[in-house]
Image (cartoon, rainbow, N blue to C red):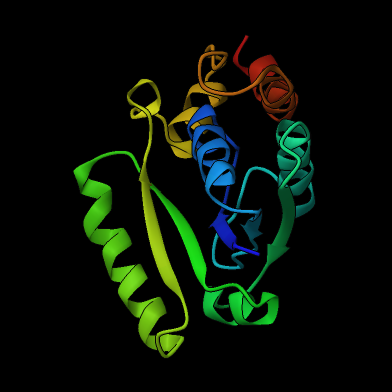
Length: 166
């Protein structure tokens, strides 16, 4: 069975992430989309909220599993018995950063974890979770960036901020 992990913060999950998930799921028997619990960051959504978001938006893709992890990806991949990590690239500027991570993961895993890079479809190349959060924080329309369920969750997170701006 061919399996891969698509790790990320997914704060929030965007149409760009979903594009990568759908395409990677076609390449592997099992794709584990896993939310990184990074204690060094203060995310908008909790790990549980992000896991539930991903479960909701991937429920129609039968070979996708959603999970979370903390610590090193190489340790998580070893625990799962998986040797491939999926990474999405929006632009050439992403490549250098992702290449360093891929090379480091390969070194730390003693050659047991390879990375596959998928370029995001052009229609989503501009999307980043941070820009979506910023747009939503100012009450902007994010409907072209995230599924309706995610948009509603973002509006709920920022609703008190909207009230104070009026």
